[in-house]
Image: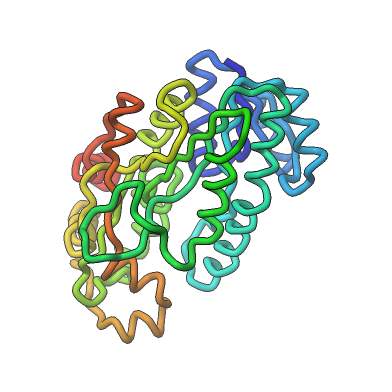
Length: 302
């Protein structure tokens, strides 16, 4: 089929291009950087140099491509999760979610596409004491951009809207790779256990996220799906295991008040109160089986 991929050079966009091409699809991949267009063409995609905020240009590009499915994977996350850089990146990514998703959904509908598949995130549900949440759990108070993205996708007329709430990516090209930013911090003992370390992280191997995305092109009903790795380990479980696999010293412990001062409230929330996100709906709808996190961590960090 013909697939228009917005965000073809990101952490999931790159392997997604390779998988789509390998599966025989015709891929149109966007990038803001003309220098990356040649690399996209070499990997078998038709590059589209595009400013995602330019509404007429987006519509023209999508209509010209005449895709069967439009996939939105646009984010603005930095290569290193530095707290100062993250603040600006989260703001930029929120703007992409609020402003560009409606543009691409509308362009897909005008172009006659059958379906639009849009990236969201799973780790935004409001803590309520339960260790695991499904897709019906309420979103947190500061998740307006995610709510707007999902509403623009699932409530669109004349086109099937599928939202994929990905967990934390790990694997090649992500922060959680053997030579990635998080592994570097763990080796330097600069990624500590915070407080009770009972926050749960729903990890998904980037290749499993790609597989779910490809399956979502023509499987499952319109709606919202968690694309995670099933079990969501507490920080007290996954962080020492990652350190062990990397051959690093065990992580230090820091109190909540110090972590809040040094890294901010979001980091503390992820470490202490974040609920996990169940992926039963995606497994059933897409006939999808992601690898367990321990198996994946051994592969990536071991």
